[in-house]
Length: 516
Image (cartoon, rainbow, N blue to C red; front, side):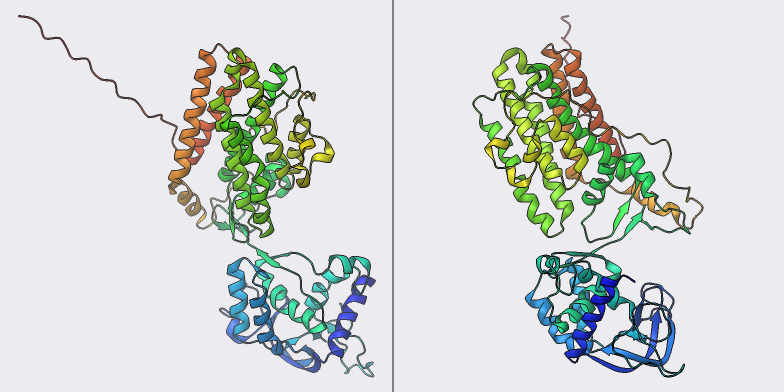
């Protein structure tokens, strides 16, 4: 046990004791060693803890108690006056319901084991029958949040406490949203500003379990897909705070669908055109038209839309805002067709490419917390200085992509992933293993997503057609063809059927009547 933690726990205990919130009594009831939690008879489910853990009956033994029962109404008042204290709302409702059900005084010491921190100032045992009290594990575990900042006192504690957000698993929300604020308030300390409970991951609709054989090796996952691809998937795939389901189909859709096809391919198309057609430097923009202004407005307001979503842990929605801008940029480049403009209107081509580079600058800076390595690579290719890679620099004129700045030859950001085999052992022998997969196959794709993808494919096809008819060289046409094929592959992954463009009906020519 570290000395700073022990000092902090002892100080917190003494603060509670001095204020009359601790007394010596006796405990008798159900206790789960795995959960390190006490349960009432009414909370047990089929003789087990609500979590499924085994419980044991603790025979009446001496114990120090924290007067938690006195804090029910006070906690409810605190939740009411601090509506953002617990997130997401489903967990807030769960905690409020638990507290309204009535709180019992909390046993905060045990005498049946020796490891842990001794209760301070207890009478020295005079015989083997005299108990030695060890603090309840959650008392010293929660105090780690304080001791890490040098509590009691210290510059770090004064500067960083109360904490902004404490992220916890949904199964330990009670300890953090009930016991923890009650202990702190009773001691005269401020609780953290927010407690947010994240959900659990399942795989193909099933609980991840060693017995089923569907455990995901994170090292292998990162090795296969890449660190930033995995990071983005975990933040963008499901509403943060809810349970999320992992499948290789979904992971591939993120890695190949959005990251490789939409974002990565956009960056490669733009920077390849700049490097080849603008003397390897940032182009000089001309007069902006309405389309350019609309594109830049979407980029410049991106951070303002993402920031409040991140602040309330709506990470998937924040990612969604970024995806909107990226898809808008893909539509913009297809409609403006800078590869064709280089033969008809070079100044206009440079304006379009500059607009796209400035758009990508905003996207890349906003991506830094999500995918730091890939975002830095994007910014390197965009020739953005290191001191301008901050949110505060997004609105600075000197941080914009500067005409005449040399750019490097672009490199791919997100290589397309092709899987040869599944990442984990076969689970077909496990009971019910096929049900989730069958359900996944039978699930219908979102009609709006399908229609949006159809529009993107049509635009990409038009871009290829325009490039070919405009006499573009192979180096210009090939990235467009790759983008079209990638979108069609995404359509197949989303719908389970190949893309079939709408066919135009040809009018049949009427046969001329034979003249008799």
